[in-house]
Length: 413
Image 1 (cartoon, helix red, strand yellow):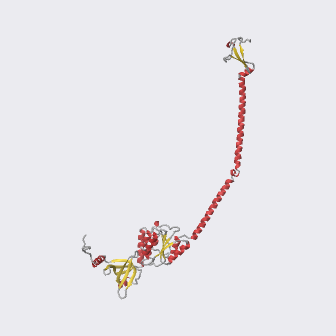
Image 2: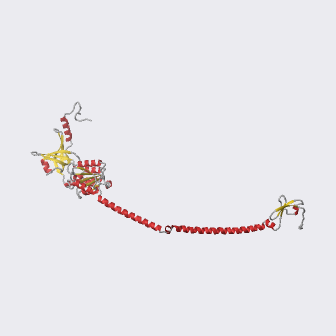
Image 3: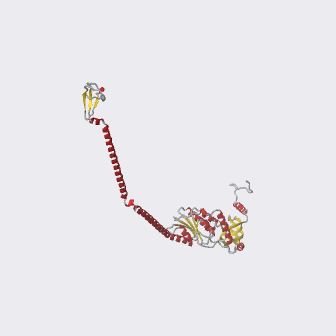
């Protein structure tokens, strides 16, 4: 890389004048530019036509000095005062004697209300297109926050309204209040810093951004792009309570909840203790009625159950069953006796038949059974020979006999 001038080294350093000249040369290359800002201070020195302005960035803690001619100010922005929004046509200059940077302006235009509103409308469309107004990302406020962060002006009516109304609704509510400038050149940086402090505080569950009413110009800080983006980036839900009900700065669209007034913000961040007691009383009454109704229905059901015969006279069922058991037992007894009687009769008949067919019955009529010693029954005279011993069985006993002789045929012997 080549340069037109020799490089500075430790052996050959540049003098301060050379550095100042080079800085001035580089700054001079920027040329004439249009700069937008807010007048933080205006100084008109007596006996000279030179006017000094301190031009501040509304969204940052940055400022530049603007030097111009009194005629330029009177022509482009007559009646210019601190806090006014202007556009200057200027050229940056480096003043080597003091090592300072300033802008030399040859034209100043004061931004009118119409132009400001047009710029705000363009910014509103831009932020809406980026999703900063999206309802889907808005968070619900906690029912009863442990601590509420409040950003507002020092000893302002807005601070008094929020604190008084919130403590009237819930006496033990805890606040962390940060007082900031709510209008002017330092408002936006201070509010952004306060938001960052409260957002880092883990005990703060909701942040209220409050300011009383004012003109459109007074409320401009709450439509600043940097502030809107800071509110959007907060992890803690933010409530915007800026101006009156008809005032709608851009921060209202970005905040999670928009309150019409600081008093309305107090009503939104904490519940009303009296209302909660009333709701608890109503809930208790509904619960009592529900429990009474339930108990009455169950008592009626129990009464209906107890009125049934089986519960009114529990022994009735047992008595019926006992009667059934007795009848069944009697019937079983009769059936068994009948069967026993019939079996006894049949047994007697069988016994009679057996007796009739039994050899004993024949023996009782005078007959006898003759058996040889081997037990064989003598059926014919030829079955024995004289001298044989036989056993003679009669009805009640038996005896032995010796065969003396035999008689053949049917002759009696």
